[in-house]
Image 1: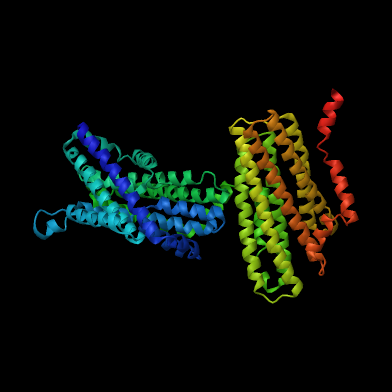
Image 2: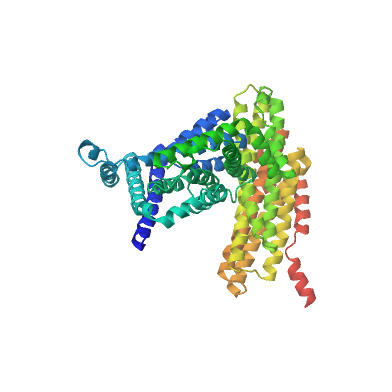
Length: 596
């Protein structure tokens, strides 16, 4: 095999992969968000999941793409791991359709109608129509159809290039001898795994195996173990997609690997054990593209038939391998509170929502505290944890918001309706606290990456302000969780002090910038932190005022805040002075003065 044939083979592989990607992307765009919606909604039973996974994968031509979508759904909480298992099994069946499509590339004709129906003619016509749609159509639907047609043509041309490049090898004795090595089951399985892990596509590996089969050197004994290994190797891109997801996302990716691994282990043991007794005559049968497509489809169907009754056991196994921490179990317990059967009893449902919202509030507080520690001791793992927990807080808002909206349609007393309305506003404030945790973590990341450090005075001022922010968070979450009005009253004076401190620190930092003690890049970072601290205080105030509003039916929020601004509230004034003394930013200068 000369250098020209090798280059032709590699270019054929490249065109094949590009064509498959282009066709799959075009199909996904043409379907819009319908595929995702179908996957999300129609998975009430495992059998439906299998059918759905097979259908969607047959359309988008990639079991990995389907599974990556499912990993995303499970990661976001839209789908449970048990629902995902059926779809993944179906995806393994659906991906075998590609092998049948590739069989079309081996249809040839020399004259007459046969020539018109040949692959070369069909590919040429489809590519011309595709490029015309892609170039001259203004509607996105037609452009997507053009992508599908171009992808199909490129895929077929790539297959023909691969087949043409390897065709002379059927006369090569060394090549034939090398392929016979793969009839060893262990070697064949390993080759299938490694080859597919590199190509990141089971369809591509089957396509190349089909191309090699035109040499006449591929026997059933060679093709079977390679086909089994291809399924396991296809798990590689799915496992990569689970990096950065939560535990359920990782469990879903692991399901894909386990399905193919268990299927490969069982059928290889069963088949070769039976062969040792019966001695199958078809092992030496010469394979062609069609028989390889048949083998691939039958093996994948057999794998699903074997594992389908054990879906619950597979779920238990992945949960045993990737265990929940105490914190994970606590989170799930919060979501389990929001059951539909409680909607018939509004008083009980509101209590369940309050408990779940308390869990959300505590997660938001912990995430802000986690982000604040990054300023003193930056850690990449902790930074990533902040981003991960933000997704969880968003999930809380989504589930609580949906549940409370369902509750609004029920018969409730005026007081209960008011509670539901205030809870809806309160969970929005908790979600915004989570957003500010992310903002603070990004500020810490910027300081770390740009090697920015503040002056000793600025560090001291931020530490004092951080203490006030930590306390207002503790007061707010405690007041909300315990429904403690006395604690809620303490929030507003501390919030106003935080505003005063933020404004004062901004003014002081401007002075340091002008004097050259700090640079402009430090100024931007410093101001961003102060803005987030100020907004945290504001959201805490919103929650505290909401609690006071629930307590007193004739409570007037605007009058309450007006009296505070005018300092007509004696309790408020004494609390403000208490916090003002506790969080005195002038102590740094007094300390410096005493040392001097």
